[in-house]
Length: 323
Image (tube, rainbow, N blue to C red):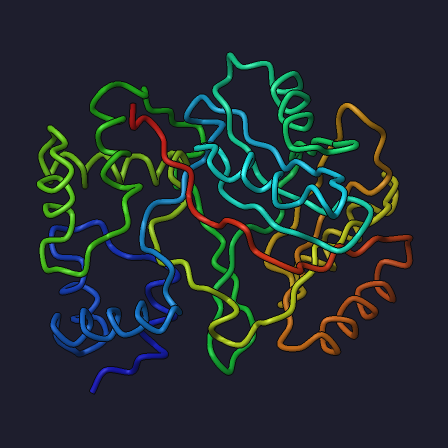
């Protein structure tokens, strides 16, 4: 009998790039393709599995992607969401508690003037001020959320970090396939090619996908779950003041913390920001969240700010090369 929890763990780490991916998963879990597909369908219906698709490195695809913070008056929040959410380069948009209250990620083509674009966007959204945070160091990225379990690390490994891949038309077509939510059918990649009428063969998609993984252009190909649906109902983005002397120690200790799913060093522009360490913390209750942050404070022994998440406005993957 299929172990659904083990299935959930498996697909959050990697979904194989093969013609019949669910059959390959079934073989590893001593199950059948039908059982795997039926279980994943239930997990989607229950709102646990959000999607199965590739996660890409925007920079290596010729985009600039940063975290953006707006300070929006309460009476302008709905307007701001209506302005921000439709943008194809916005993958995440959250209402958070703190001096900056709307936080979103924005990917733009390299030729776009990022600062001018965000400044104009802030005016349209009714923001009184804004700041942009560029990642300079990625310590921990992405996590596996398991029911009745801690957050598990799903760090990706680039097999050939010095290798490169030309982003030609074939690669763009393969990315167009790999960024779609994988349908729950036997020959899933073939179904995408047929439905979307993308002129590329399935074998070429899979071969290109492996190259994208090995060069780090595609960070992973896996399922993403809704952490609220598996019990992690409280989270906060915490930011920490750290000079060069303390930075490496804080990053080393924070990287060990299972409650932290994302850990970055970020540089701000255009405005000064004294909190370069960004750590996303998850918990199963608000009390637990508070206790975890206090624990982190006792480890770091530096000033910090906490931006507790209040509402999710948007969370989906950016779609590249669709036009």
